[in-house]
Image 1 (tube, rainbow, N blue to C red):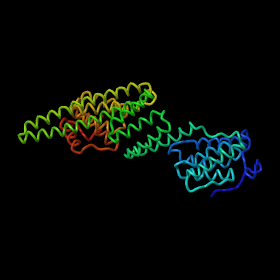
Image 2 (image 1 turned 30 degrees about the horizontal axis):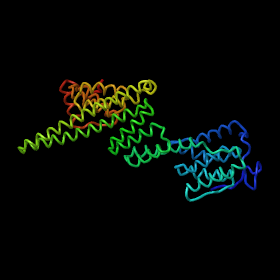
Image 3 (image 1 turned 60 degrees about the vertical axis):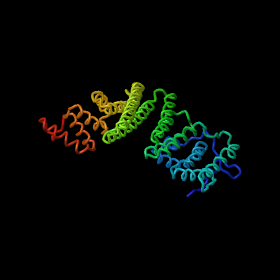
Image 4 (image 1 turned 135 degrees about the vertical axis):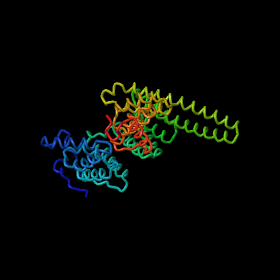
Length: 386
């Protein structure tokens, strides 16, 4: 597929090798100029969502040999692209533009050969050509590692995600998001102390980085959940010991249960504090983004208050979360339960219907119970609640 046609040989040749025309040469018409600029913009695009654009640009850049000086460095960097077709098309265009072919089975070797030729051999003959900015290259490489980490994080492979986030930080450690994402991976691995440390680093780098506060709240909430689970185990042990007549063992289990519950409540208050920091940090941004982050903070507080059976406090936070994001089924589920705990059955039924309207479902037993209570109070569950 790689063409060795030397389209611009008449323009300039040195020792049998085609080289660049002067940098001032432009495409001949406005439409062609716009197409060239679009291709340059597309090949520089990052992220999986722009793979097709990068591949198309890599294939098309050979159409502008008069701009090879700008295209060739970008095509060389494209040889390292993770999307299969981008390196293939980039190599084709490089060969078409230069009449050179450094193809190798190993992608890194292919890249190294082209880069060596361009910056060490060709550069002497075309001194205006300079390597791409190292900072820009590092920025792109770090972004790619972060994107890979996010992919594995979403798939639940927290260890692989952590490795990619650490690679991103090693390349460019100045981005708060990379540290925050590494904290999320550590949270998935239940390495809570490390998670908190990385979130603190992100906060120190960018004090208004709302995600850091939300994520710290999530860590404390999960730690509290573990403590409450331990308390439940101690409670079961206490009851078993009482049934067996082992009063001393029962008392020891009770004390440990109380300690675990106290630790859980302390961690939950730390979580609430972080969520409130998130609300404060995002106050200005919320006016522009439609509170797309604040709802998560209110939801976090609401769920903690539910866990503590502080239903009045819970409903206030959950209603605020719902007002900011009415498309989240989890919020409606939590409100259905909270309204039930407050004996507000019609409101509970309304939230159940909201869940169903969004394509979800509640526990059948819970749904049946609320439906019966609404009917007993003279309501018609078949009607859409207002």
